[in-house]
Image (cartoon, rainbow over all chains, first blue to last red):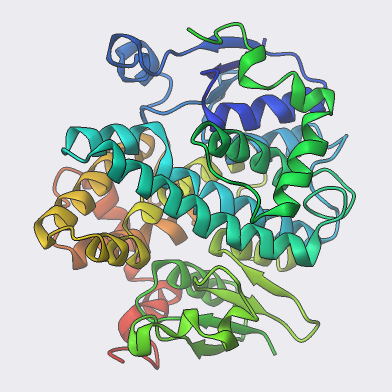
Length: 214
Length: 214
């Protein structure tokens, strides 16, 4: 049985849940509580599976232990190519991957739980953390919005769902949690609305997970 | 003619230079000075090519304008598959991609020039910036070293060069610039030494670029 070690509010786990749903793949969800008891991701049991202290991890019965959400997405695409989440044309798939990186390398790693926790431990105020969060989301969403002006249709890349949507929606969810005003990013907001109506995305939402609220 | 917009000291551009060299591809290098005049990456001329205010960008004669180093690496692999920089087996290539993300999402975006500049503008001291840099490199290199214990040979993934090496070497170069002690990471250090002797890596080094020292 495939297993996904994740956490309901983790944006990175949320990405993988969307892709699994879209491709119709069964998986056992193993919650790793990122806050309780100092964070289960730091415990020996989890570190034996993933030494990064981060979720998600995807495992299968053949012994694969795979960290990093984007690597998991690519693996799912390589292994279960249909329904596809990458265009077939190399230039088109390259553009999708550049959108993925604009979100998963240039926004999320600056603003995730471990960074905000580290800032608190270093004595940064809530105000400073909030400014930091808002700054990197704004810079990142400006870039993504500009890419969408060039490439989007119903979804991030034309009218075909792709990894770009799979990664954008959790980032928008996260930004809304932090009360970011989305009105400067009308394309992001519209695509978020459209994707949230699709069952693969709706079923992957944090509040729909068994560990939600835990 | 393919063009690479980059900067000699940019780790992300350095990754792409290594891959281009390894695959024997000709490219015209267009320097974008990240510091002079407030940063040429913020100028209208560059933003028309890449709205992210970041290097590198890869362009070709057919009008492709591709941002994000990892997307460029994947594009080069898709378009020029040999010599390969990804294993053929889906599980093996997934592991390589997870190493890439451990470096390119979890280390570099926290420590690159724009982040350090923003911290200065917010009034953080050099001491605070140095602590920040060291913290995220240490956390990240611990993860990478643990992955290498499981998967490395002569290079990051067995004895076959891959994207993982292409991404690791610029990150180590960057860490050495910031005087990070590499002795806790013997596998990283050994692979760095081996790769630097290869011509594709040596020719891509910052000091070998036409704009070096500019």
